[in-house]
Length: 134
Image (cartoon, rainbow, N blue to C red; front, side, top):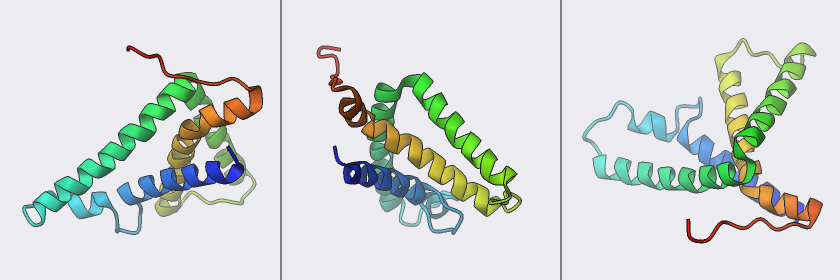
């Protein structure tokens, strides 16, 4: 996998989280909530499509990183945010900034999760395979 492959996967993960929720007010959550009858079939269809994308990304993330890997990535991202705040490069007093930071962190975890098998293969030369017959 080239570095561009990782950035494409990461971009799609960020886009998925951004489409689901973002502080601009233009997201699936803002469109669906409060749950009303107008455009109900379209809202359900869009929600199911987004849910299907999450199933793909989260399944790949849990299988490739596992709980320990996810916790390590979250700890790394949290420490990086802490460093930025401590150095004065980021101010989290604005709730919108905190929302954007969380979108990037969740997208990064999912992007790394879906790319980890390719990264591990490049680093170690070992292939990851799913167990057949589960």
